[in-house]
Structures are given as C-alpha cells and as structure tokens.
Amino acid sequence: MSQVKPLRSSFSGPLVGTVQVPGDKSISHRSLMLGAIAVGETVIHGLLEGEDVLHTAAAMRLLGAQADRDSDGVWRVRGVGLGALQEPAQVLDMGNSGTAARLLMGLVAAHPITCVFTGDASLNKRPMARVTKPLEQMGARFVGRSGGRLPLTVVGSDQLVPITYRLPVASAQVKSAILLAGLNTPGTTTVIEAEPTRDHTETMLRHFGATVTTERQEDGALAVTVTGQPELTGRSIHVPADPSSAAFPLVAALLRPGSEIVLKDVGMNPRRTGLYDTLIEMGADITFENQRDEAGEPVADLRVKHSRLRGVVVPADRAPSMIDEYPVLAAAAACAEGTTVMLGLKELRVKESDRLAMVADGLAACGVSREVGADDSLTVHGTGEPPKGGALIATAMDHRIAMSFLVLGTASAEPIQVDDGAFIETSFPGFVELMNGLGAKISEA
Image (tube, rainbow, N blue to C red):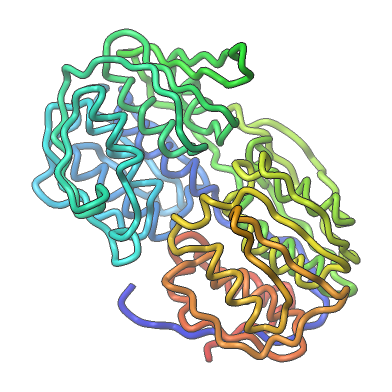
C-alpha cells in the first residue's frame, strides 16, 4: 500500500440491511492455484478481488497460466497442467498474504524451477521455516533470510519424495503447502494433524479430481493423504462469502441496540465456524437460513440481531476454527457482561502482527480491563456496557486489527481511530462502504 489512510469510527445507531461480504479469501487463493495446474478452464464466480488474492493471480500468470477477469466479474483460469509451471522471469511479490506465499511455495517446490518470493514489510517479517522444513525433507531447497524469512528463493524439483509429516503446530497453511507439493510427487504424501484445521485444500483438491483421504489415528489425530500425480481438470467454482469478513458486520450488529442484518451466502465450513459457536454461547441471536452446498462447501445466510452478551471461556481446541476472529471477538467481549477467557492463542503472535499483544494494547487504550497470560491466553473483563473508547490504535499494517477496533468504535462512548486502514483492502475491499451502508459511522480521520 502506498498511502496511509487513518480512519475514525463513531457511535452509531442500529445496523439494518441485507449485504454480502466479499468472497472467501482462503478459497479464492486455492481456486487460482489449482486452476493454474489443471487441464482446461476453471471458471470462478465470486472471487475475492482484494489485494492479497490479486497478488496470487499475478503470480500464477508469471508461472505460465492465464488468469483473467471478465466484464461481469467472473474469473477464468486456463491451466498449464500438473508439473508444467514455468520458471518466472520476475520475483513473485505476494504482498501482505502469508497464505499465498506459503501455499505457493509448496506448489512450486515440486516443479524443476527456481522462484524468488518477496512481500511487503509486514509479510517479510513473518516466519516461513515452518513450511520450508517439511518441503526440504521432500527434496526442495530454500535460500532466505534468518528464520526462513522473505525474500526467499525456492529451488524446486520434479524428483521430490513423499513424506509423512506430523504438524508441530496446528496450521492449515503448512498442511496445504505439503499437500500441494505432494500433488506432483509419486506415491502418497501424508500430513498428520493433532487438531483439525481448515480443510479447504482437501475439499478443492477433490473437486478438481485428486484423491485425498482423511483417517482418524489411534491417538485421535487426523492423517490427511494425497495421491500424487493425478489428472486435474478445470472446474466451475462459486466462492462463498468469507466467514472471517462476515465476522465484522456480524459483531457490530450484535453490539448496537435495534440492529438486524442478513449476511448472504456465508461459508459455513465447520472448521471455520468457531466464532459463531462462541458468540451463540455468549447469547448472540444468530440464525442460519437457506443452508445449502456449493462445490463441497456448506453455505448459509446469517440473520443477526442485537443481543446482550455474557462472558464465556473459549477452549484452546477451538482456536484452529477461529484463529483470525479473536481480535473481533475481543471487541465483543469488551461489551459483554462478565469475564471472557480465550485460551491457546500462541498462533496469534505470528500473524500479520503480534495480534495478541496488539489486541491487548488496543483494549487497554480503550479503557477495557484485560490480562495476557503466560500461557498465551487473553482475559477480557466486560461490564455489560461498551467501553469509553477515545483511543488511537496502532495497527502495524494488520487489516484485522484495524477492522476489529473500527467495529468497537461503533459502540464505544467516544470515537476510536486507527492509524492506518489502507490495508483493509487486502482482504475486505469496500469494508467502509458496506459498514456505513448498514448504518455505521466510519470516516477518514
């Protein structure tokens, strides 16, 4: 992003209306990548056109695929076939997207090409060793900065060997990178995860024609196995609305008396719905209407009404299903009655920012009592009323920190300002316009 954009959010009236938030970012990335290595044309409806996903589209073009947007907003990807990605003549700039960088590293690692990855100042601080370590075991090579940070060079090979890899931490990105590398590797590649993480990669691989199995182990872990060198065929994909993006107007509506909104076509993958489960436990009035299935992904319309929330304990094993939603949950907890304890948040420390520290600092600046535990827990003490607010929040180029505190600002007694909202466009283009269209008061500061 080239220009800083401070934003201010002020106390608003009820939020009312029916809207559709942008397409799911996780599914959008994967649809472009798999479309690029499939045979034939992949047609994508509802692709998220945020900056993160547009960086992925640009990277797939540099790797030899065609990826173009029709005038009606439909994207068409003409793939090169599995194993046929071309060596790019330029550096692959992944912008702010850790998902795009990590998944694409896995995909190119199984091709006999050399690629250089870079990103913006935020992405270049994020650790990549968790991905490069298993890919090195398969036979790829990496040259990067300390900690495996970007800029980083991937020296791929079409002679990788399959592995069985147990994830040391729950991470759909690491799992997906290994499975994507396994696509062009003979035999079967297996990832074992102690806690279930997002399974968009497995679902979409099956949709394109790959064989992917999931088996429960004796210790309760899940073993996810992909059979290498399948024939992938272009498919039609309807990208559901992103549940992580839907979280922001949803929580804002819960906080403002008189609010009632409908969020259309939201992805309801059970490994992404931890926030909804938690909010309902807190007393949220959320109903799921018109439930259906789109290319293996469950979808529903969400009707949300203002609710009096109460504090709960959020168990650590729920973290993988809501890892991106803790900042906005903290905004809800700040307005709830009683104490909310969120356990097992270590992964928040290696997101676009140290989200755990950023959320805690932002809450304190807004007058909210909170503690960060030595076990990477966050405890928020709510009074049943919105906090004072009146703070300037440092976002550290993190779009979810910015949106979460702008949501809190719609309910707080005094306006909340974020130092930079420009990065919201990476994941939620049109966020301000959508929120204001429902009745929020967000403006440039």
